[in-house]
Image 1 (cartoon, rainbow, N blue to C red):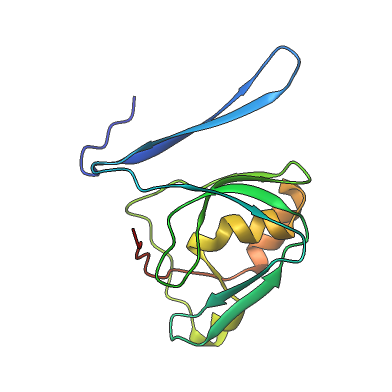
Image 2 (tube, rainbow, N blue to C red):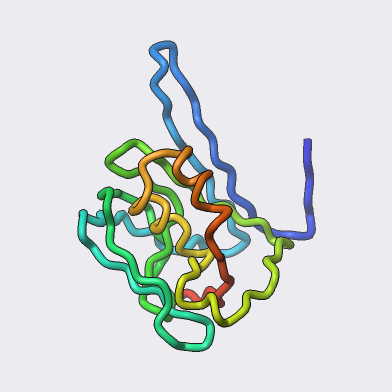
Length: 153
């Protein structure tokens, strides 16, 4: 058993496979305060995402190749609803979990326009890729950045 009392909330993701090899996904959301409202969202093929760079300039822009459904967080100040849990038309699934003390290296501003914000990994992965294999190939070539997560409730 792993215990960490320094952080008052955490999430757990699980996958259960039945006798017919069907996989069922689930998650918990343990928050120390009222849980934020989640939104069920559908993103069709061709839907465009426009990210913002930390310096306020336009960041990475991409269109959905594989439609997906997701449970999202409430809208943040940049107007996006970050994907917490989702699955695309190819069967690729995603679950966002928090690692409270994790840190990315500072990103050189020259990469801002082509970087994926950490909170947008779900929409980026589900909308652009069909398999885990594809993601394993592209992730080492991708820059990621941290943006402030301010939730509007």
